[in-house]
Image (spheres, rainbow, N blue to C red):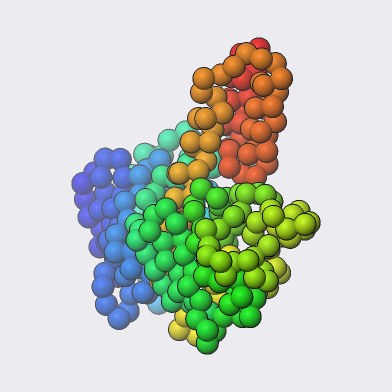
Length: 315
């Protein structure tokens, strides 16, 4: 296609296999879009394209991503306001015919998998290193580890006694992000399983609260459950007025989520099926382990079915 469609505060450049979305810098452009700068969206990442009437004499062209294709939207979990949606292009109403033309062109390029959830991220996540200031601490991510450094003026006694925290992405299954624009916003790291969360902390982690994230406590199963309140959970930072804004904390959450999926899920599946042994007990154990990964959301339905069949074929 090779054409460019300029809208209000954003421009779409159409390529043969993707759309390059560039966001303008200016006081009227939401800060989240300014921080993203640009995003290349492969056609394979889209499920549909819509064109609807907008406000005040405008029309809205929107590329609808497939579920699971974009780590930013996966982390946002439906909490983004329309103005911060990176897939919306607002145009003057007089350009509706032109917008419809490009909508039809994009629809024609959608593949047969457009109606299905994506089995991997197809849109690039914001790149590490990243950091932002929360209300109770500073969060940083270097691509391999997430660190929380508590502020004595904001951290709860539970977090202060637990000490600063560092979490390898290989020990995580995901991230929970609650928008700072909602009541009690926070970013929480989700461990892989009840017995696998052992953050690399200093001696201070032996204090009250440390057992929340490790299996060394007497009742590991109950202690592995995170506190209901994020302000008491050493695996979470909380937001507040001016702390953890969307344009800083959401790209951070998306980068962590992408790294978790990329560095932890795929290697685990590959390790399960590589160099298979033919002992039936070993095969049964590996299938059981694969089932646990599937239940935890670390292996997709398609991966589970394919790998299980491959393991059974080794018997």
